[in-house]
Length: 240
Ligand SMILES: Cc1ncc(COP(=O)(O)O)c(C=O)c1O
Image (tube, rainbow, N blue to C red; front, side, top):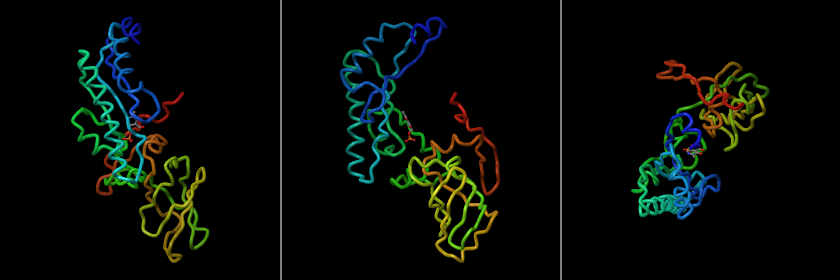
């Protein structure tokens, strides 16, 4: 990166990713962070800005466990920050958090940035773990069949709604989304007299917005039941 930046006459600011418990990328907290920074500090055109730790692995219904594990992740970042400062490195950005833990991370004095994604629109999965925001994104589906009084079929299956965090949610009372095929959604009606008919629309709340939203080209932005804008979904189709 340093060589490429030099060749282009550019300077690249960077954060060091610290593994604060996710077990994914990043160096272990503490001394390995310092050692990595010492190795990179002489490289031209790279500008160290701070640390990045993502505690997205903390998914639990137990608020005490969540708080304890989240605080520990935050502490690991804060301790690594202090170690770097003690060795003369200024640390400007300390980025932690996830949507599921944002209240805890945002309250930690050592964290300067909360890196939340789902927070922007929310989804049924985060709501089930007690994150009390309304869900701003839904997928509008159409009923294409009412084979029996207890069942209906929609035109949205796994190609339109991800299920890596469980089934999406139908917020319409008495209407349950119970299964997804590739291109069909299976709906169970609690009341066999339910008037749902072919052509009716059902709004479905994605269980996981991050993996559902990029299945579409555009957001239809709705205010007071009116489409007020059509916005492109930029991560759509970026895999090659
Ligand atoms: C490094 C990193 N930061 C932030 C996020 C956003 O997470 P969330 O949607 O839980 O806020 C993700 C999501 O996977 C991530 O991998």
